[in-house]
Length: 301
Image (cartoon, rainbow, N blue to C red):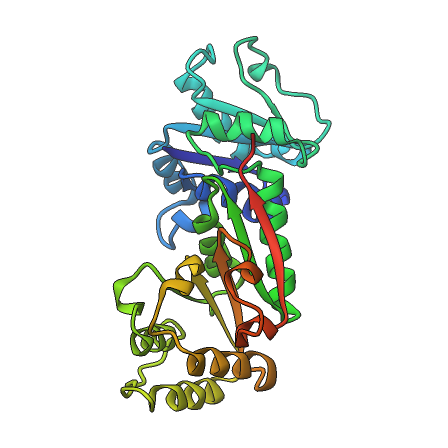
């Protein structure tokens, strides 16, 4: 569903850091000024053209919003599409104690109160009205994302343990798009990653290198050489639950990864799995010795 977000730039941090990521990770296509406007045509004309594409209109109400002529213009255009608020095309979201404008006083209006943005119920009302679902509650999803970012910055490797149908892909995508653009990503479901050589080639490619990976046993020295030339690299590996079934992933691969993470300090991992990292590896396994922090994201009930 296409969702237009109308907001005052005084609320930009909250919109870009919380609202937009939750909508996008939940499956909505977000129409928003900082992504859609280009240099050239008048701002109002661009704004109207983008707004006209929307199926839902989220109005982020605040003191500054009500005082802004441009925000009121967007609000009035949205309400004109559904003046009786009977089709839930317009979704007012309160961010402060400012009185709701009389034009939004219709009893049929679905008003979302996110003055406390830790309110999971209010988030769910908003996301469902936009055809979006995170699987988890929005506060839990945001908490997991922020904790992962904090740990990666320290830098610690992280095991993201997910349960149920939560939007972990959207979480990793958000990290890569906004906060950590150099975070490489390898999906272990990709058939090319089944052999050890293919995994190493995928890892180096995800980190933006064009290195030609030789066949084993020379593939591991090449991995070490390239990572050494890059400095510290951050890499996400999804579907790590498959690792115990990969017969070609041998002790030499795992001991090399342990060295690159713990001794060389050249690699930081974000590992997504459904089973905790420690339970996937037997005692004494080389990777069982790495310092990895766990962040859980479970489906809401």
